[in-house]
Image (cartoon, rainbow, N blue to C red; front, side, top):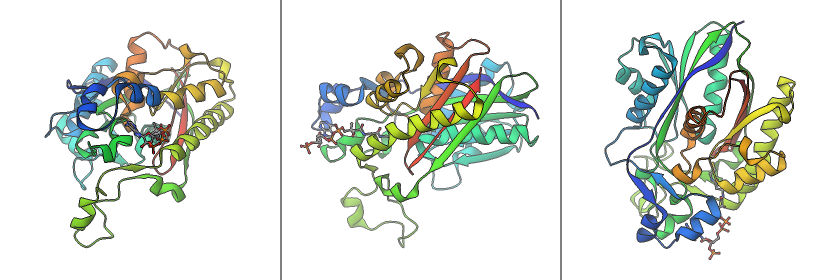
Length: 330
Ligand SMILES: CC(C)(COP(=O)(O)OP(=O)(O)OC[C@H]1O[C@@H](n2cnc3c(N)ncnc32)[C@H](O)[C@@H]1OP(=O)(O)O)[C@@H](O)C(=O)NCCC(=O)NCCS
């Protein structure tokens, strides 16, 4: 069976920088609070009217150029987002059209912060089974248009940013690529981090009084998410190391989902990883959900943090709850 190697990476973030000081004009918060609790200094937000599929297209163009491929080489799109442009159809088909490629498959992944991990695992399966040879996995998020930018929504609004990251996976006989993945879900915690509306349970999808209560905005039990995330991050890393028959000392770089610097620091401590082997860019972009790992990976590659043959672990936790990891030989 062929291996699924990463042959190109790319990312795109909107130009508009929103600092913690900007947020403090709209809600009762402060730069000091946000930095101390999350490590975030600033994030990027789109101008209203921007499409998540367009952010993804820009990230994809960069990943294709990095791989030395034309868009026509792709035979499958896997698109992770929790913020689709429309309720339906998904962003995958919008990207297929925007790329101007033929009628290739477009699979939408709805696993929130863990979307990229699920997408890579799926791409690996499609490549190993021979269904596809060249697969785009892209994560793209526009959070900013769906946040409650008032004091009522401040616990979540300060954490999230917009952006997109993309990778190209290709079949190879070389000894590199995805080695192992672990995927988990625990739906009993679905309502601890969720956006309730629009809902198919409701005739017309929402009631006006629900909108007045702000139930269309995401809500989160922050301390509970924090507690579960730190535990599940470590478990998922250990699972893929065990599946791959390697130890943490052999891993050159861990790229965690950029949820919160305090979560990253705690996971690094528990795994006994020095700072230089755990990638972080949350201070610049905040939490970009399905886009955070591919953005971080594209930046890490350009900073020379991965050499051919290195072992890389990607790991995420998020709404669902869902969590998982990929072990990859670069
Ligand atoms: C959200 C999070 C940063 C809050 O930090 P915390 O230390 O748990 O803070 P608490 O929720 O206990 O809130 C402490 C106080 O700060 C207040 N607060 C919340 N958001 C605030 C903000 N943006 N600015 C200022 N104060 C804020 C709260 O209202 C609370 O006030 P109170 O004590 O008067 O009630 C933290 O819970 C967290 O990081 N959780 C995980 C979030 C995450 O990663 N989500 C995505 C997962 S993919």
